[in-house]
Image (cartoon, rainbow over all chains, first blue to last red; front, side, top):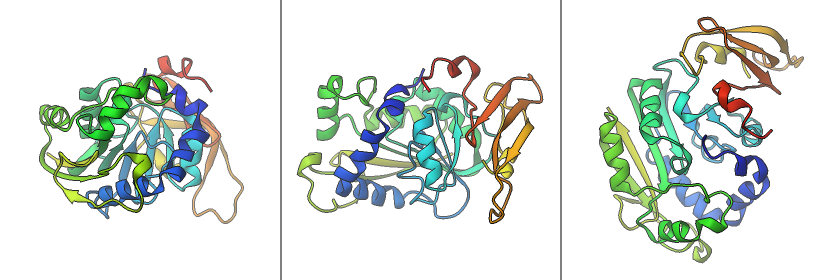
Length: 209
Length: 70
């Protein structure tokens, strides 16, 4: 079962994070905006309250947590309750599939990537945004996750691990962006968005097949 | 949910098409298209039934439906 309960029980706290860490959120959004195509139909897998889908122009969102989906709908994203490993969509329905800070909550990354592959058109692209486990914020999350209701059951990944899994699922042509160079409480103003990975704690990957 | 979303929605188990039954629509004259507020999506292959709750289709695989706290 994917991690759902904390998102049902702590929906307000989840929303509060984006308000308390607005500069971090804006920097992550800016990084993803460089990777997400501006045309075509998009799906966000693990859409949450659509904090990323709505400003990035992604039309459809799927998530197992109902409390999150009600907020996604309020942000004009078509909300569907479901899980990443068994997506309830037709083959080849989307030009973009987006997964933002959700890859750490899925039960099965290979099945999730195979499902993303299935619902994408042949020309479509997959964009994944996540906190790199081998980064300052990633290491801190990993060390303190027992005390965080959202991250207690999370499995963080490194960029090298994720690339390996993407390659195994048939994805190629990787493009990377990174941001967040300070601990979250020390961020004051938008953080720069750079190409590549290895320095920023938040990494975005775009892949095609 | 917008009724047009049906075009891309599929059964999460076997990926076959879904048929909308007992649909109730929002009475909003300004809406551009039909907004389904409740009803049932039925798989045309396996017959599994998926509820539309508060306008959100619940397409969780059936074995996960009960485990998820409301």
